Length: 216
Image 1 (cartoon, rainbow, N blue to C red):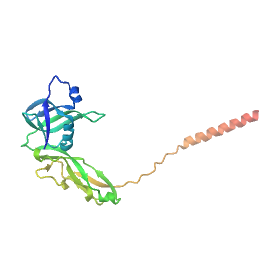
Image 2: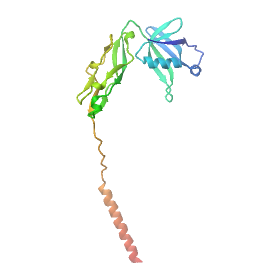
Image 3: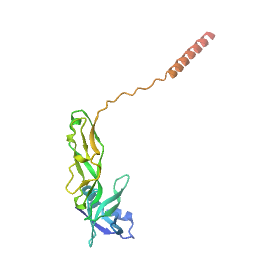
């Protein structure tokens, strides 16, 4: 479980001033709690985001209160990628919730290694249901089992942690092998009419030059 120190935000303090001091303006809401403006340390949040993502619980430590949340939304600077604002969703630790968990692909597909085909990643995350304490940060997919062109991995093939149930249909394909397509040289169509016009133009030009020479 990841914990972040948080402070209630003073309404008189501007967001830009908070950012200049290394903090990120944020808010938490949900589970019958009113929307509460807070601020969190920028470096601490970035570290927590890497560890928890948006599918693992994050505890906001307000000093006199601890709030269990999920990172719900992160606004970032389009150029630098630095977080500008964060939404935390308050959750009930005793109730199961549904979240999207990213897939991490491990190993090398035998079919790719042997030059039989190329790897096609169809899904990059799946929906799961679990108690907040059982939510995984990511799910690992072993693609080394993809040994021939008929090989594929579906949601049902995943080894899920205890207490975790897949909501995404088990028949949905996560990864498969596709036949490697040879690149064909693109044939540029020849405009015969343009060639005829060009030949005709040259012929008229030559005839014109000949006439001029006779006149001299």
